Length: 238
Image (tube, rainbow, N blue to C red; front, side, top):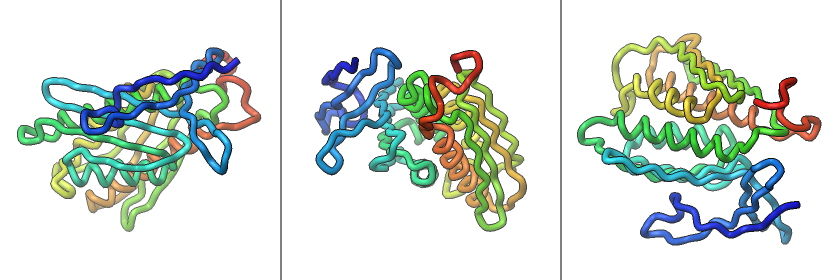
């Protein structure tokens, strides 16, 4: 039996300049939260989550929808916004991020905290991960660069970042911050993720290929499959 609830959620849609409510449907059997949407005159469900994180260094709000939706990213770091936007677009995700931080000191705190909050939101949206394909992989070329990502949505966080980048920047974004972002994301998502660079020389192209590949691999892993009953594991849990 499904229980319909209306919950006031502290997230990007509940910031002081935007007062809204999220209409959620909670499934007590599977523990998955859904938003209720209207599509062609009938209600449909989508896996969604809204998370907000505030520290003395940063303020981050994230809303994700695994079935897709609006994409609006504002972190005050333009190149990072671009990477997150194309990651969501190629992963067919709905993503709204509002973030600010002490970027006058360094970009590290904001980038890492966005990774933490996004990982938590994706984990919550996945619920108990029942009925999904679990694994996803993608290889993405970007001109001279070729990157690949393999994902297992098991709840054991582990990151392999096989990307031999040299020190430098792409659009004012320190290239080595990408690893810090993905490490924070993977740890809080609770997944095993391997990111690899086969070759490439332009840092913008390398980072863009990595973010696109992650989006595509994640989109494949979270795809629901009617042939899968419960979590895709012989243990019965992920």
